Image 1: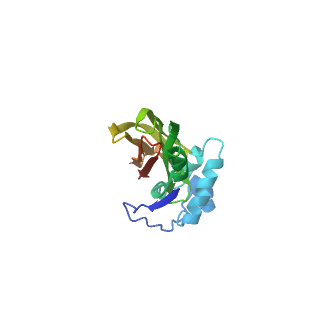
Image 2 (image 1 turned 180 degrees about the horizontal axis):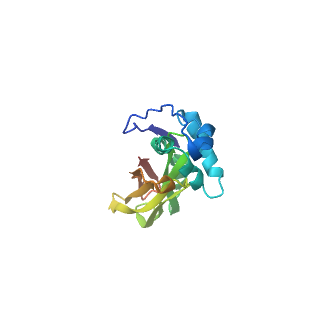
Image 3 (image 1 turned 90 degrees about the vertical axis):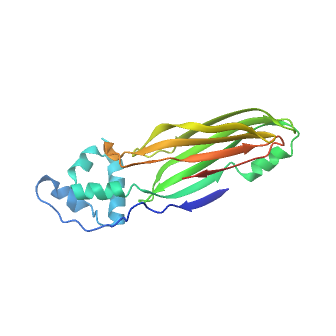
Length: 204
């Protein structure tokens, strides 16, 4: 099950046309239109194709062009997905068993690429009346090189009704080419029940 969420930008992102400067930056400046979203997307793709990860090219473009690229790393959309109510329903039809309930949130930048996907997983076992064993973990995957996992915490892990409620939060830094411009705090929760049913959600 997927759900989409839009995030309002914390700043007014205004793209402006930049003039080509002289010296060694001329070739790089002529190659990319840093005053348009399409031009910045081309720059991003080209940076990813460089053998050195794009460091030399990034340093060769103008300060204005670098800033426009950094601003365009802003997270503007989140896609939430769970392991699916279908899986949960199947578990609930069994008298006992073990299953894995998970929730993920995929974060997209203004340029349209995936920044990372945050996942919380709760593995639990039930007997029809209560959950008698569980464990929780969380991580990120599908990570763009511009984003760095800084760790996270299990904020809540306690018995609730016949099951367990777990809530986690991560810390992800946005550091393109070692220029750290912001931090996001993805989070998720999963609630398991003694019937084998589970539910969950994630947030930006």
